[in-house]
Image: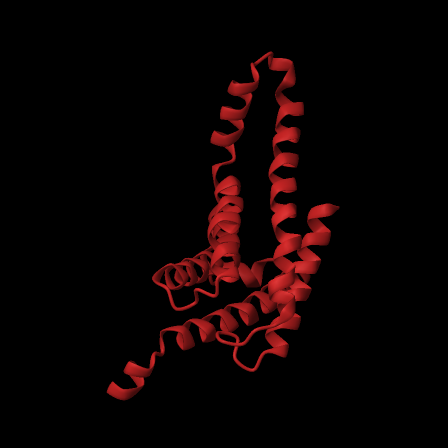
Length: 184
């Protein structure tokens, strides 16, 4: 429930910020600054909640606290990395207005690549997996599954494509420096 509330608030905040700023790179919105104070405790809470869930699942195995923590960290590397990067990289960059730094630009590229792989390529991958199981080519899959499945996927991918386009536009503006405009 808490994660769902966080997701709704984060999405809503993002929409408000993007729609309110004329320039999403240099523009400032009070909500972007203030949301950080909600984000930091949530990330800490979520990490601790994940650990407690893991501990409850494995407490019958009679492991010591340090072994339980080590196993939790090794099994949840990606999620812990996600939380750590948000807390120790994104929050300071956003707070210190470091949008001109290499770190900010590298983070933007990684965000773009991650979003594309996890939210866009997921759909062709699902179709490809189904086709492989059924002995169909990728192009045959949409015609062999129920229409409502294609419609549901279309409704699910549409906002992902919209957000990806916004991210791409932001990336173009980020790398469209005054020097590049002079040379072009």
